[in-house]
Length: 189
Image (cartoon, rainbow, N blue to C red; front, side, top):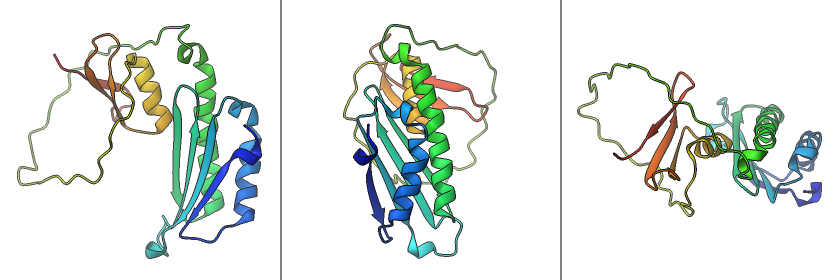
């Protein structure tokens, strides 16, 4: 992918060539990692309603790779610092993608380790709470994935959970990141 192919979007703020060039310079330092990228978009957003709050500015970076998309969001009061943090996360995820190339290509099996833990379940403290759905998302592609591949996709997208169809059982399963950093999988019996 070339520098010219990167798309930029400005929401709630004026277009800035300085921000574009700064982001391109940061991303171009590791252009070797973006060789396989299909497309890339960088969105700069300013929330005027929250002016003066530490989350005034936001940078979203979206990279589409052949096997998985990568999404990064960074918020803060300084746009250039947000770009720095977002590009650091992008480089880490791209390095992980390159390291797992054999897995994504299907030449090496995905590995997942089961951990035996005895955890206590807390009693329901929110008996009067009524949940509200903030967002609904329709899943376009439900092609079967191995558990390890689902975990990698979840990490690449920056999610805490990921719904997928298991290759082993052909059932819909959910992988999630636990507070201790390990992963859990919910699957029908």
